Image (cartoon, rainbow, N blue to C red; front, side):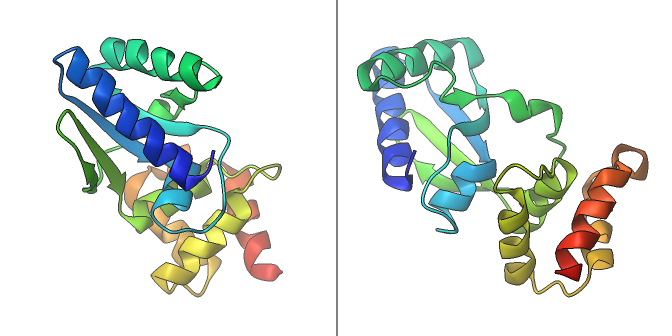
Length: 167
């Protein structure tokens, strides 16, 4: 999904919620933020988010999925196991939907914690590192520890981050 498509689907989600007379909130993470907020890449395969009210938003997203022949999980909450308290900014404020995005330091911490070699994570991490003006892997790992306890940071995360700075 491109940034324009994501915006369109979120606008349609607002419309569906208006028809249901429900106000909703969506907090975006991952590739959707990299596309929409930072223009760091052209597309993402899905939209990682947490949202409320969850059951009503799931019903509305299913309507949008059918309308556009999207996977039913185009908007999914698989990221919820990684979310901890952090600052959010309103990115889109519609009549029945508020869309939030995290600060870049939190997004970097999440990306680093879930770093996967077979994904956009490496380029996303380095893009955020540049935005934040970080110079070393130690600075990145310190930032990750700002949000996640040391015991949640797997050695593979440390190695992944260190390897990015060795390149």
